[in-house]
Image (cartoon, rainbow, N blue to C red; front, side, top):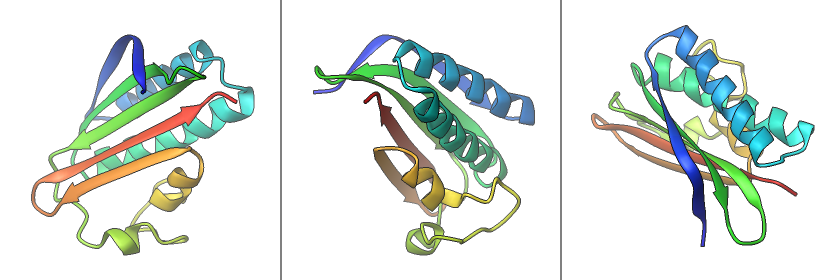
Length: 137
């Protein structure tokens, strides 16, 4: 069972500056969880892409950053949510190389590859929630 360690940090995502704040929160959580420098970079990169998507495609939203523990190891979990238009074609959006704009070029598939756990829930006209988790090795 995964449990949250300490208080989760909420960050609204309504501007480019908020994307930077999400990156900083994730980096701090990754250090707290004792992720290696490589794994810190991976989770920060994934979070940056998803925060940018939340802003650009979801019209803004929020990120919830937590340090988590599953009894064997610690990790970082970030949940992004928005009330935007949703993703009409999830399969296409998760295709390698697919891009619909000017993010980091990773897309959802790239962000998914950088973490161990990736959950995407979306409904057209309602919004999108994506949760990622990166575990310490």
